[in-house]
Amino acid sequence: MYPDLKPLEGKTLLVTGGTGMIGKWMIDRLLDEVDCRIVVTGRSREKFDERFPGRRLGFVRWDIAHERIPAIDGPVDYIVHLASNTHPVAYATDPVATIAMNVTAAKELLDLGVEKKVARFVYASSVEVYGQNRGDVERFAEDYCGYIDCNTLRAGYPESKRCGEALCQAYAKQYGLDVVIPRIARVYGPTLLKTDTKALSQFIADALAGRDIVLKSEGMQYYSYLHVDDAAGGILFAMLRGGRGEAYNVADERSDIRLRDLAALIARECGRKVVFDLPTAAEAAGFSTATVARLDPGKIAALGWKADWGIEEGIRQTLRELAGGKRTEAR
Image (cartoon, rainbow, N blue to C red):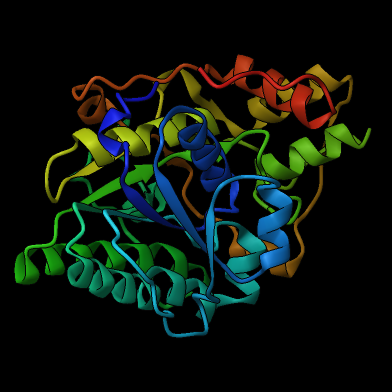
């Protein structure tokens, strides 16, 4: 579900991670529905052109993990920081860049937000900030804080997201910057990248290639998932209707599912079966140790947002589109 997008008429949005799974979907939706200017930052002009052929978009080349932010000409009304390493192999093989995207690049964008006097800065965060469930709740509300062992390679992602959120609050206090923080469930959808190594992405890739679904654990992990269309809508809801300095869980209780049941759903849709296998060392180093990570979406629901895609319908639509079927319109 999307908010009224009319307030974005004539505005300029700077979006990092625009060629990623959520960014691609969100930008397409905005361009289809509102006359706004969107500037995308990215490392590769070729990848940008491939993801947005013929679209009226600005592009600024910026490797946010390794370079200082380049000059951004003209006014900017909203900054949406979506860029991040978001899958296990990236956490394990490029941990410094993972942290840099969430902290160093975030600081440079926050400085830009102050300079440009933006109406709002959106920091896309993650279910990962909650850490491990202490066993005292069924779902994480926004004030929950679970355990993260910071002395591990895997901690680079959740700890840097926590630090990025803290930076946002510091800028809000010290410089009066208007920030909002959507915390997003595990996302899937037709815009997923082939390089994504999250379990769900691998399940989908295997099924579409005619292979059995490989489950690298017993599959008892109980997580919140979300279709990319709902993720994009939830982020825009938080941006346009959320409270100053607030964090919002973007999730759908209907799409809470155990990993083994998710694997079985995808296998069933593609006529395959589920098999079990041990992970490689690189994969295991990037895996989350959380076994129950379900988000409470009550706070964003109070803004009027709700998810349109249940997990079964969303998976079917994703498989159909990725297999080359007709595009299902965003709702």
